[in-house]
View 1 (spheres, rainbow, N blue to C red):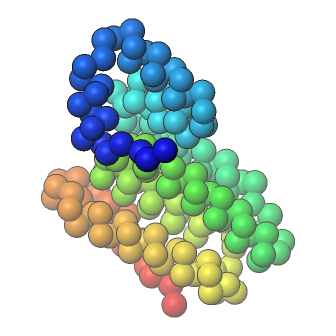
View 2 (view 1 turned 180 degrees about the horizontal axis):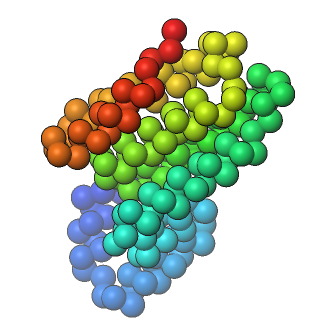
Length: 160
């Protein structure tokens, strides 16, 4: 089966009545956890972006608290898991300010985790890449919003 384009799907959804749309969304939510999470965000959490960011930060903090720091191998696996969680929250929101806040929070958690970044090139690269991504998104934000994040970013220099 060949998937329809987004334009075709939009056109078809405009034709459907409310009951059919509810049935489609319910069926879509049944098949993948990711679909259900996205629908949850769109229906319940998109109105309160600050609350969404708080809950995302709590989830990232929890992921970092579960990291086994005794071994660099296990630490890398735990950090990657925390990054996947962060990326998932960013993907659902699509707000640039949320993305910057969550990427900076991830970097701060990584710095404060006690994991020695210099022992692992992969972790060091991961940290630097997340910081650079935050800088890139930050450049597109409004100046008033940007000022607060620039100050926070200056506390986390690139590692070498």
